[in-house]
Image (tube, rainbow, N blue to C red; front, side, top):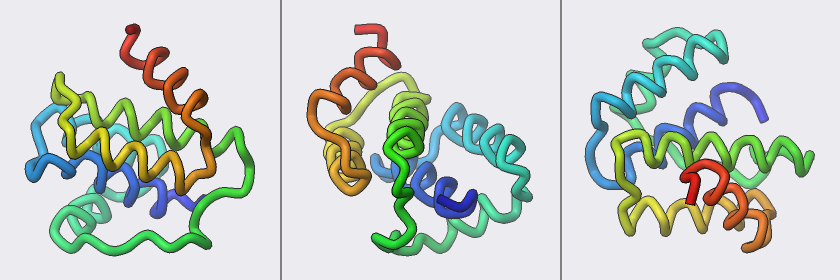
Length: 113
């Protein structure tokens, strides 16, 4: 999965509740730095959402788990997990080829539940 695709998925989950909170924006900016992408790339994705294609999903199961974990981290960055964010996480997990047990284990790991 290329860095822009990963950032795109992270932006999509962060905006699932209809707004981008300061903590989410801060976390996304840190991901930009980590992925060595300019902040303007993030702003462009926020302003002009696009659709993720199936061929952009990594084939490597470990990469898929890492992406899903990052999606969970971004979705709870504002301190809550909304129903819409949960729905999108389920869809993203399925798109990444993760089974329910794997998704649940990652949620427990991230949320500490």
